[in-house]
Length: 392
Image (cartoon, rainbow, N blue to C red; front, side, top):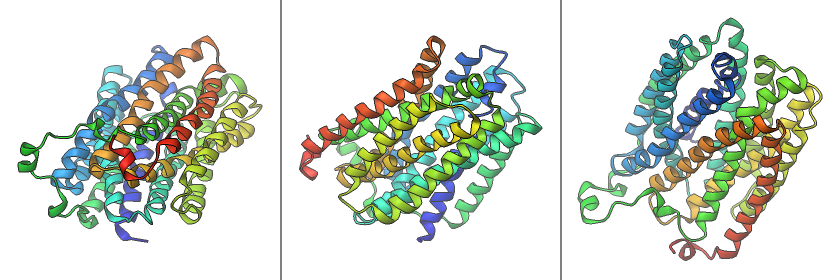
């Protein structure tokens, strides 16, 4: 395996540990301060900051290179966790921390995916994105699990641990990560003045826009699940933060095995569309099965079904987008990261809102939307005619 990809995998795993670590803890932290509302909003503001900044970071990285932006992102991410660790129950400090965390995670994530696109060919890009997906899956394995386990010694400890991990990753990347975008391939300041600078929506064109919308829906449904699962399982089976951590651990292991094994080794170029369709159906089944939870064990099994489907979808969607795009990889992956963040903005807000109406609604809606997302895939296939189809 390429050493640079290994560094990027570690970086992404750190970022998503940081995102996932809060999932089993947040309901406990805000339980005495309008729990459902603040739980959803704290998840959403993080993603809102990432949504606004990811394409900007990606575009800047097209001009100055990926490495500097990745370094800035990791260091800022570390600081955001230190702030949360010292919040001591003050909601406004928690919000400041989450906004900063989203801003800097957007830098690291968008540029890390662009980095992989830079150093892989079209033939092996799906394998590279499979490794990216596996790293994100590993982050979701260890993030909620670390949060759930360390919460036994206080809700601040997981955040200090995440800050330490982020800083260690920063130091490691600083010493070994090489630049992936050579100067001759960068967008220059002079070129920026001569040509209109592309916005994030430059890549949102032709048949590709249906893949971006699909990416949004997949993340939207996942984020709604993350915002409400603990409350649902608390009422259903009496789950604790530790139990939720273990459930995500099981789901993350399944997802990482699929992305690192099935997707990376078995999915060939041209087969991505079929794998996405299978993943959407499995994800929908996972949502519906969660409604039947009768114990922590069955809930973990059903969440793992959902995780398996999600693991099939993500790397294949990213691979297709990076293969077909006609704009810079930084803008492309920045837009995809923004769609991901937009899903994480809206998902918790809608999930939290409908949960107050009926505790089953977030999971019913999630399953139905996963099934509906197959229509977006079919629309992409109908319009996809090679590179020319993506420019109009």
